[in-house]
Structure formats: C-alpha cells, structure tokens
Length: 150
Image (cartoon, rainbow, N blue to C red; front, side):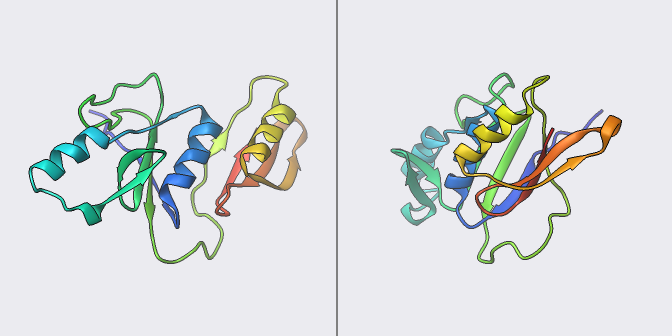
C-alpha cells in the first residue's frame, strides 16, 4: 500500500509563504480555526500556541495548503491529499535547495505563468533552454526557495 506524505518547507513566516504558494498553485490555505477553538476550550493548548492570520486562528509557526479537489477533514481543515506544510524555523535559507517544486504551465503559457508568479512575489533567476529536452525558468519564492517553471 502506498504511503501518504506531505512536503514540509522551512520558513521564517509560515502564513505569508503559504499564501504565496496557495496563490501560485491555485491551492487552498487550510483553515484549522474550528480545531483550534475546540483545543482551546478543552484546555489542550494555550493561547500562546495560537496566532491570527486574515482573521482566522492558526497554529503559531505553521500553515498548510492543500489541493482544492483532494479530500480533507472538515473538522480540522487538514488535507488528506496533495499538501504543503510550512513550518517556521529561526534561521533563514542558507544554500541551494536539495529539493524543489516544478510548476507546469498549460501549453504555450510559460510566459504568462512566469509573469503571474512575479506579480505574486517570485523572482526570475535564470532561463534554461535545452532545445528538445525542454525550456523553463528557475525562480525563487519570496523567501528565496528555488523552483522551476516549465
């Protein structure tokens, strides 16, 4: 049986980076506010474990996004499919990624997608043209994490 997984990305600002990637991928930011309310009411977490972002309660230091068509737990808001979890760490990015996302445009839509990602806060780093092997852009998200757009 195949295992379930999620990709965890270190960040200095989980909610902001989750917002960027949700917009970039057309994913949904998970809303754990009802779970947080239950945990607070039961005394299982304290207020210092909670933050607010866009008027919703979130777990301090964490944010996640999920594919809008994948199943999720309606009580917790946690996705059970394609999912990215952002966790805050004290240090900033210090080197090249060892793992990165490849974002694919629709046929003929590379330029439009690159421009949209730049409008969201991404930066073009380098264009790669390998002829028949492919044409893509290496970009960085707002925190400097590299990703490819093809």
